[in-house]
Image (cartoon, rainbow, N blue to C red; front, side):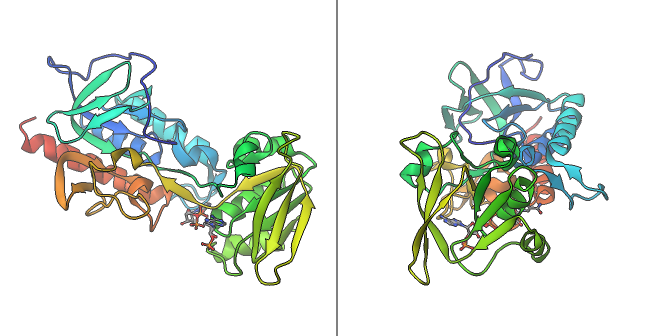
Length: 333
Ligand code: NDP
């Protein structure tokens, strides 16, 4: 889910509402964490309402082969994995709606969520809104988004058949994107601002060994060229060690520099860390001024700056769901 701002676009059934129109649980986010929470709460007969944001399926929906999710010895495509989770959640009664949260009061009981055209009251909430792609923030980069600048290789790689492109970053995302893009592009520049990499050894070695990928380290992008032409024509880069500035002609510019947690919306209502991640306790409890917020839980990448794996997101989704069940039981449901 790209952010937590969402408006339900179809009414769906109100089977989950009790006579006061109060839900037992609402889950913000339909990535692997939100969907795992949905499977568990649906199987507990809580008929969860899952709000899908701008990126239904979350980060798995824009990834390629996932080789480290247990149970898939030959790997599984990210979109297939998340689609299966979605089917599994729906099979047990989860209701999925597109939506944009415009306001929330986490400190009311029941919790109030405003989706613009519809307000939802719920006894519990799981914030599983994930994290969104990070951009460099250059004006030229922003101006050319959708015109050769992209943060999603899986979505846009196809448009760069036989072209020259670059990928920015030094983590696993950048390596994965660069490898994936060699299917289309004839040449991929991997541009990294330092000389040391966060990427895992295996992925870094694979990318380094690829004949179509050229690494440019200690290199920063100063400008994406082509704003006047409304299409990426090249980049101006600077070597931070030598100070050398040069231009490279290319047609595609991909970001692989990590993600920003989608929790900005809860600023002031919930404790967040300096980068905006939810400061959870025991991975699932949300707090305000250090005190647990009753009925409000979190899971997945929005509260996880350390592990950020599909399996850990699923794991904390399960934990949040179990805490929801416990909370409801303790409050007489
Ligand atoms: P990371 O945080 O691991 O890496 C981000 C990279 O982007 C770093 O090299 C960082 O540089 C660079 N960067 C950040 N901001 C900027 C900037 N403003 N300008 C230039 N460069 C910048 O993020 P990833 O998305 O790569 O990975 C996140 C997690 O997901 C990791 O745990 C990773 O293992 C996992 N993952 C696993 C995959 C798989 O197994 N298939 C695929 C993708 C991700 P610097 O190092 O200098 O800070």
